[in-house]
Length: 293
Image (cartoon, rainbow, N blue to C red; front, side, top):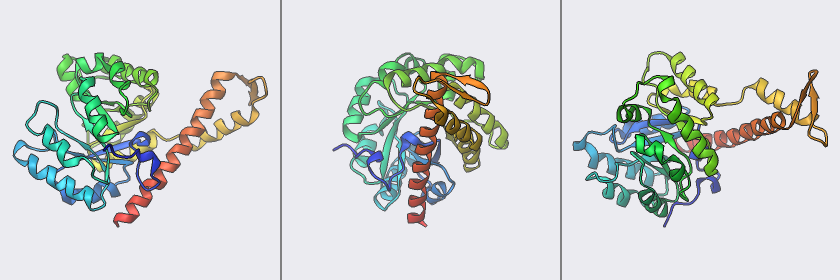
């Protein structure tokens, strides 16, 4: 049976609302609770790139045991066609702490439909040229809740540089596919510079400006800059509240001497909805952290 919708459970973090999704290798069970305590909105236990082939079976057992014992996480499984794919699915199906499955090299809507039928909540990791080309089809699969951009593998596959300009088309394609498909704004790829939090913050702000709703993290020190970048500021919330309160019946308002029309008012409403959803997500995360402490 598919996993229940995490949004229906007040004690379960919802990956749809996650600003920061922190990877932790699946064979490092000693780091799982530390990852939860980092402040990340969602932990992603990794069975794929973060685990050497010889450690795959150990990693799978370690993650499954933690999810049975009260841990909660998204799990990145191995790609279709690998020797570990079917075993990953069999081991994870029905586990109470599973928040969703992240599928690497997502290209096939058939594979995704099968996974969604098993798990209910799937986050396709779009990281190939074909995956980006099919992004609108991928986003339309029932059970796909959010697209995730695998920028490093995409650049390798497409033969592009790892620059903001070179990745702009792929990023914008995922944003538009998510919007057209009626799902939550996508998650941007990792920043590899671990020594400079400002680099992570800058990358996260750019991703937010492009229409992303969160970002993958590969180190706990990246979590705070990402969370900050994807949260409405106090000033943005104040301004949005002021605009919404000033709206007249015809949808036109004057705020600080300037006229604001329908698109501005709608953007203000979205900011307030966004802030409210983030608050609910934070409360869920805090309850889970307290339960593990």
